Image 1: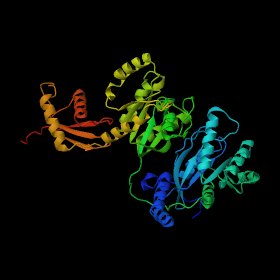
Image 2: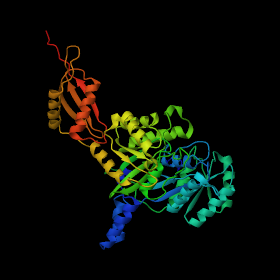
Image 3: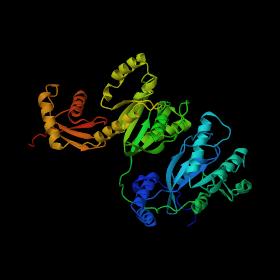
Image 4: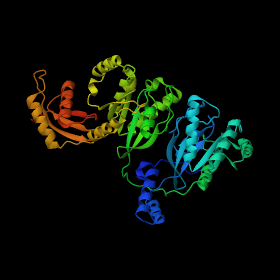
Length: 491
């Protein structure tokens, strides 16, 4: 079987429960303090599938096909791709494997020299990725050839001193290999002709990558054994999601700019807060209905929706300097319908004056009356105001999300409720709730068996009383009713 025939990647992330780089370093430090043989400990961890995975950064100037190559390597369309420069802005990490070895691959924004504003932030993120990587794939457009910007990237890579594999992209057939050969002039060794779009040559490229990447724990497959809780940051464009992530991370982890829609790919970041490690996911701002979007924004919205589905808790950011919009309501509804635990973070609180605060409270009472159960945190991603309240709110929401009410206690509660507040009589009939059970958690799902149809208003009343009795702060509740019809006697 040739290298071209092999599958070029698949994600096997948290299912292994491997230690993060920081956790691995801390574990090794403790082992050293206790006087253990470090080589023996490293061997045991590697055998168990733990240890920091080697990191491969993919860099190059804008629009040379970096994200397309990353998608090819990980084996799915994860990174946002569009046929124009500057779509990727943050450095985004995925897990991949090749020939039985696992590694992390970092997609970066296009690097350019002498740029300002958001382009300078994008270039800085690419440079951070190079510094943190064990090896680098440098992607060059073979059809265009080496440009002045490519030459500048070469100087940057030489200063970094990391192993570099040169990918001559957009070689779709034998006729393009002569163009690839011209890239020997960059002085980075053999150019590997590839077509990230069609997959041509990517197997040989990855073989070359494995030659320069440090060894990693072997591929292992097993049951999910836990991992950091996943928290999705969602909201309209420019409400401060990336600023909030940078503030809780304590570093400039993602690109922040006044221009709305800066983030395109969901960005995962492991952050320790309140003595717990969390996986925060910064997402693209959701502008409008998905079917009305186009290009990168359309795919970014789809990935945001997917990130919410994968998350356990959604932190919805609302810009308090603007009126609560239909779009804010749609995003909140999306999180609730996805069944995620929910925290509402009212951001930019430092910019609020007394008049705007008065109107904001009226808007919350009017528009969010159905979401009074969601914990509310008034924060400022810019100044760090009340950031310490974010984690307790998330923990409360997650605890509610996982709460299970014993069947006996639930039915005792329902019996008292129905006796004190029976369902209204409709058409000469009064339906009764006969029995109830909790069918599941994450979110809590209740099934009620009744003698007749239960009106929506009475269902909302039951939900409200369930929350008063059992809490459920920060978690949506799903209540379904099954009618037990009386069976006629057989004649």
